[in-house]
Image (cartoon, rainbow, N blue to C red):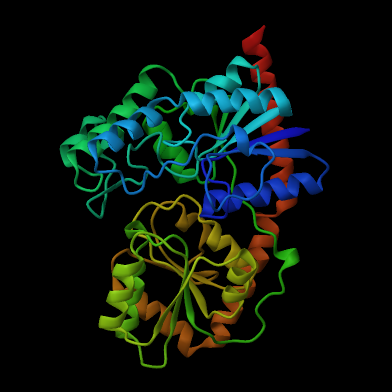
Length: 414
């Protein structure tokens, strides 16, 4: 089978890209032919179709210059360059199925139109809440918010929930409204939701509930030597954005003893603020590694007492949790969104409330003081990853979803 993966970034930037690249690698090993479509970016991996990619456009943070904002708005609503480039890749690669991931803003649903016109079956994995929330995250000024699900999209403008900017919030709300109004994603045959929570929110919002299929992400413990020695630092892995709550982890460090250590892997817009906070509340005890390779992430996890996932937003299904499980490492995460579907409190980690440094410090201290308990939790987590989130079962399920998408596309074209 010839599979075309579509995502705005083509490098290991976050969970969506990690999932796409790992799935593609697994598909190639299974005898499939895989190609990618993305926007141009200096960090992209090599692609023979790069010449057809639309140019790089940075949208986070939103541009403040009116001209740049207008240019970005046009690209968000409908990218003619992305559609044109997609049409050329379809012609040259001739995919049997297209698997979309995060295409919002830089690619836009114009790529869906190109695939539909060419009769290509389309599957889309939803890695966030964009189709129900204009700002992706169900966050309004740092607080969980589902106003656009419970009310309407004007709530995003009224609340100025994108960077407290009326212009940016209005632009995102208009994007979502127009795409819904004109059925921009109607060409997607099957939507994959990695968590039951996300599927529930999309169903409430009326976003293609008849096309939603819940399929968890996967973990591959077979290629990872698990943690065998107790002890080690606490670890945070991921994009350094305010929604991730890394500041809560740092404040928790300030409440722990001087021997405790936190290692933060990842980069993002909040890094400078987090580094300043660390120097204020836990000087010399928080180390920032920046973006590191997947193998370095795995090595870091294996060295850890626990992975911290202190998010203040509704996580979907974080790949970092499954990676920690593969390494035999427990997770301390907030009981929001899909995290509570992954972490079994007291067995594979701990669930805590968001924005509570004391609760996080308490949960971490219990594992730091009893490293054997942490090691036992990690073994349970690895066993769960092997039985419930195996790559083999995921690949079979993906194949079934691709077949369903092909059947639906055939019905539409007859």
